Every structure is written in C-alpha cells, then in structure tokens.
Image (tube, rainbow, N blue to C red):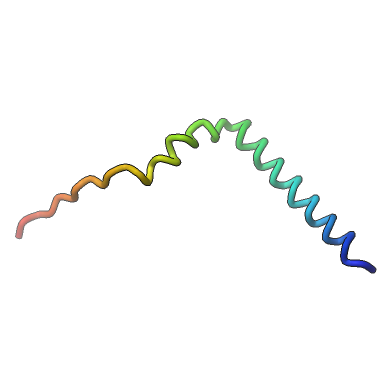
Length: 53
C-alpha cells in the first residue's frame, strides 16, 4: 500500500476540520474582535501601585 493515499486522506480531513472550525467561529461572531485583539499587546502597561511599608 502506498503512503500517498493516506497522506491525501489526512490532509483532506485536516482541511475539512479547519473549514468547519472557521465556519463555527463565523457563526458565533468570534471574528468581530480580531482587530482590537491584535492591537492589545501594543497598549502601554499601567503602572502598578505598591503599598509603602
């Protein structure tokens, strides 16, 4: 048995799973906040308050 059909089957299954997860994400409207979340690491850190001992 050749390995090529097994690799093709695995790649098609992975592509189908990715497509289903993408459609699920679009259905739940999880993609709406992608722009805001991508800029989140660029925000300045707020100074932490330390209690003076």
